[in-house]
Length: 219
Image (tube, rainbow, N blue to C red; front, side):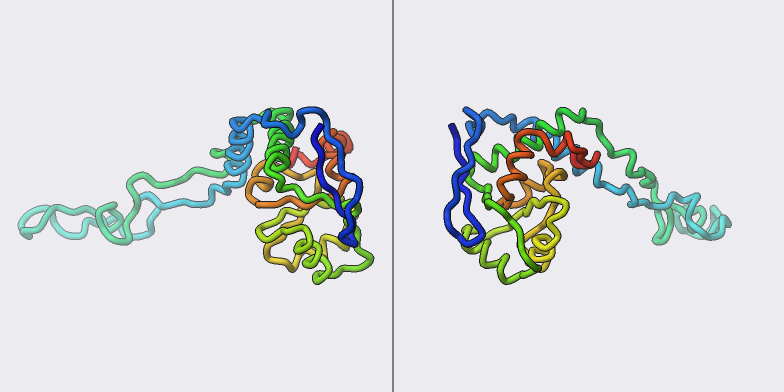
């Protein structure tokens, strides 16, 4: 049976979190995780990039000079695609909806769980027994990360009502806060470490965070 080491806020060791048999084995599906990351990144594309065709460029439609007798190549209006400031031959007109993909909710949730399992296998999940602060303290949060050996980017998963911890971590450039029910494969893989408290980790692995009502974006 796998275990996750847990520490207390005073840096002392707490009782480790027992996991199900084979939960931290290399049984996760990397292809499913990849599909979830592609799905989320495609959904984030706004589709605001656009160019103008020759019919959308403002300017006169008069022929610049006569067809013959000048010795120069034939030319049309100043809005032609061959001239600077003219239109574009194949203008980009796609919107954000054109990039969106479909992925069933159960597959997204399984991919999110698989991404966390990948972090558990690599020992990149740092678990705290109770991640609460009496008041916002950025220095205290920094010392906690140093005690955990977090020296790279860290995703801090917090409960919705844990405001003091969120305020303590928001000024640290290497830390990114997220609600535990909004954990997703892309954010998990985009950070080296994951910091979470025991109750939130258990709820995520058991699927209780989704039963209690997670957002559609994360689920």
